[in-house]
Image: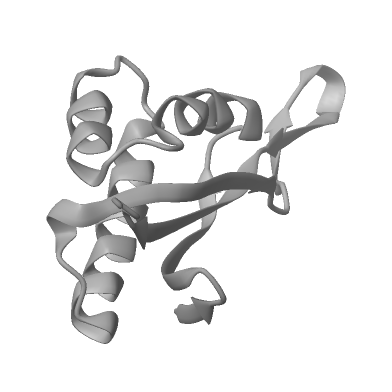
Length: 121
């Protein structure tokens, strides 16, 4: 998905229904927001969190959108926006004693990343 903003070109990508809690994804997104594409990839590669896999996938998709749809150079891109919102919980049931069922809610989240070219003057 691509948009043009008044300040320049923006390329976006979304990862929807990703398994994992929003807070654990946000702590990684806070680290890469505002960094260049190359720096963000290096940081994600060496972070010890499970959520870096889906985030890397969405980031690469946003850069591919910028390159293919807008003709931008990946070396000049910066992560301008990176957000995570809650998705619907997956409902599962675990058997318990005396025929009871115990509900388990597995969290999901939606990851959105936007990249813009650097404005060097």
